[in-house]
Amino acid sequence: MSLHIMTRDGAKARARQLRAEAAAAGTSLSHSKALERVAVELGYRDWNTASARLSNRPEAPCQLGDRVSGLYLKQTFEGRVHAIRELAGGMGYEVTLHFDTPVDVVEFDSFSALRQRVTATVDANGVSWAKTSDGQSHLVLQDVLNGIV
Image (cartoon, rainbow, N blue to C red; front, top):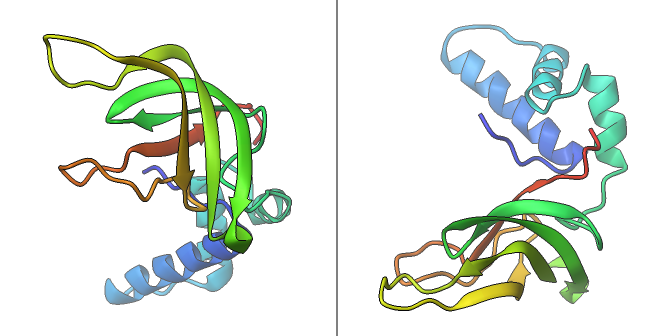
């Protein structure tokens, strides 16, 4: 399971979801046990560690200079955040990425158009609002690769 929880509030919401799932299955799960499970799902040792780390994380999906990976026009990439700016009080972010390896933005076999630097508007989860004709987001930031956990 891949969770993209970036804040303490998000982790608490996930704990409530786990409790509701347990209740629906006829099992009792305390809130503290649910928080501990969420911490483990997120890769932390315990809830106290997760809570401390999540409270210090910025609200933006990434920061200037971060190494990131994800999907751009349905193709995987790794790269660096070249620029980021907050839009409308945190309702979105304009992010410019520089890919390690250029990404072909054309699906046709007869020709290619490679891009190494792109700018997109994303939400707080790192998912762009712009979509391809088949409904896929143009950009999805999946992981920050800085190695900080």
